[in-house]
Amino acid sequence: MKLTFYGGAKNITGSNYLLETSGKRQATRILVDCGLYQGSSFCERHNYEPFPYDPKTIEAVLITHAHIDHIGRLPQLYKAGFRGEIFSTPPTRDFSEQLLIDSEHLLIKEAEEKKLMPIYNLEDVNKVMALWKTIDYHQKFKLASLEIEFYDAGHILGSSFIVVSADGKRIVFSGDLGNVPAPLVRDTEIIKEAEYALIESTYGNRIHEGVAVRKDILEDTIEETVKSGGVLMIPAFAMERTQELLFELNELVENGRIPKVPIFIDSPLAIKLTSVYKKYSQNPNYFDQEAISMFKKGDAIFNFPGLKLALTTEQSKEINDVSAPKVIIAGAGMSQGGRILHHERRYLSDSKSTILFISYQVNGSLGRRILEGVKAVKIFGEEIPVKCRIRAIAGYSAHADQNRLLDWLRPMKLSLKKVFLVQGEEDQMLPLAQKIRDELAVETVIPSLGEEVML
Image (cartoon, rainbow, N blue to C red):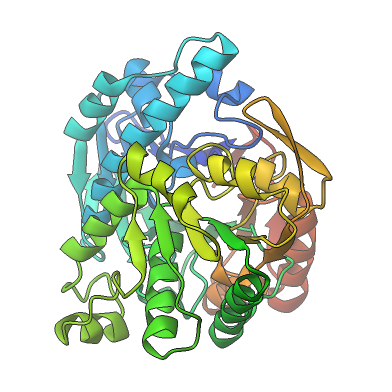
């Protein structure tokens, strides 16, 4: 087998790996993930470059989960000639349809601003969805000589790590591994045998706060902002982060741990995606036992007193008419667009207000610059001074920290020949690579973009 790293190499985003087998009858080419590059804008240079392989020759794409840096170029792949099959779990397919439609709108808007042609349109999205097949966890299937199995990655609802077996070898693609224990989703599964592992390294040199600690920080931040009479802005990804927040805010509200203030979800996409969560709410294959029990008791964990949903533009604008204190949860999670920008333009300059980051802020994003302490930012062409309080909770990340990454690899120690670190920045990758070498005594490499490896 030959493996080529066409994305996620020395970069967190743009996940894209080509796996090829040879032989006259059993030769095949498959991709694992096909994601957008994200950073300073959706119109990253890499997103506009042609694929470095012929999409017409790709038999299938295996999707680990529905985040846009893992699925975002699928319509572009179709546009370039791909007509194979796409495989994922059922929730991942449902989420992907909503996210690709939303991404198409954002890409068109940014392309217009940059005077570029959009990389795909809504018709391409619809054509992609027609190629999509769903596979449950542990439902093995074959593609030519490859045997494939999806396991629960515990990252977001329906997320997977994928084991591909051929010629007596097993290669595992981690996708994004979860921050165990996490609300809602089941814990990351463990496997004991694989010769090769591609493992994400987003937090390869970090240790997260525990669940109790992060909830305390959330509670303290709300109380601090309410006491000062300000607005708490929380940029949040529409999927998983928003639902986890709702889950924990529900508990804080029901137990009287935070003041009674209006809490706005100003994200049409998050509201739509929450309906997918509800669709699978009785399915023990995807939710953890605690969430299933709460659903069965009739606890509407995505609804509680004081919660207000802003679906329309008019409802979003009406948030401005509600006096502080208040909490606003809006996308995008890295402040790279979405309704959060309107609230940041209004409240970043307010010393009584707070912006709370609960997700990883990729290098070059507006959120990253605010988090690193920039004095002013430009939003909609307007220079906005940053005077509000800046807070962050790493524990809300859906990515495994260094300890959990090592815990996932450790059971494979005896069989592993090589580990490839992907989906990370150098300051996170290098310490993790050394940890794996020291603790597991396994050869560990950090591949470059376009690098080929024979397995």
